[in-house]
Image 1 (cartoon, rainbow, N blue to C red):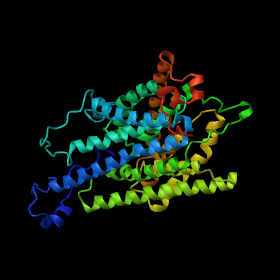
Image 2: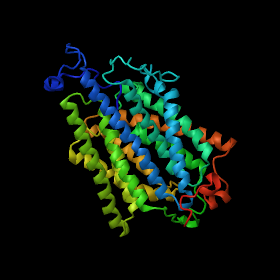
Image 3: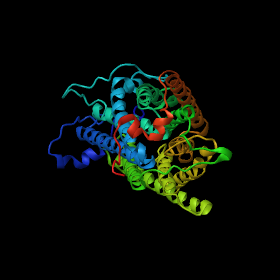
Image 4: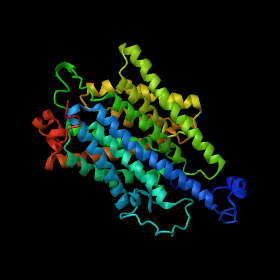
Length: 434
């Protein structure tokens, strides 16, 4: 999703091939110009990819509602509706300009709302509709906020969470995104992150980790001598559905990050991205199944769900260049990370309700670090980017969570946590007849 690093001018290969079929389409005869139907195909890629990534909001909602306990299901639904809405408004209000306008090798762009062209006034100079590009970038922003929601479930207050979401989507995510996708200082160094293993997923994971450390674990989750009390989710079918919705949405997430579909070469690359994305997820799931059987003699379906998602996150940093075996290896290590990181977090008494930290933060780090194996970036630059983005996001997110905790509070009362947030915070139970 290197918005300003992709070629602006497409070749006329596809144009010359289909020109006779289109009657007399309008496009510049100059070979350096972008044909109008090339712009249309590029725009269509953004729009289709964008609504697939938007559909991931449903996937996150289903996954989270399935993995929390019955008494907190409605709250997770409400949070996911609210965070997607806030992300859209904040990304228009200032996020897009902070991320892309006037970065020029620096640390952030400009503040202020994004000004869309008037109806019929898009000058086509970008090679696609600028509104389609804005929409595609916005749904990525919303994904980052969804990651935080699941980790902090079942004990976070609603309004402090929304305040943090507004800052994350309007300021924090756009600033770190500008360092690479806005041609900021990391871009100048040669950092590589094709579709956001670090810029989207690890950013959300760092923000979630900072919140989890300050919020604390759910009541009764951890006992003496390392005891961990299982807190099963409300619906495995719902969580499984959420995983498959996310898997589907990832084809838009990674595929449309090619940013061009005006030539057969670009269309072929999008197809190759689909293949690598799909097989990395499959390898993550199968690896998780095998490891669970070998280690525990039983296979936890929630771990397998997260193994598939970790494979998706890991391949996101470079889904185009790897061979199929390499893509599967990257996804398999993502699944392996889940198997070992989930119990590690429990040993550290870091309560991550849905497993978002292993999936999005740790698998995101792995996927970003390993891109040099397929020729993208170098290990030193990748490590610098991972550390810089992690340190910034962790420090600023921690400061915001600390201020919220010290002022309005971020955790519900013990009584309300025991009662469940559906009754205590919003008054709507997901399953009132049970």
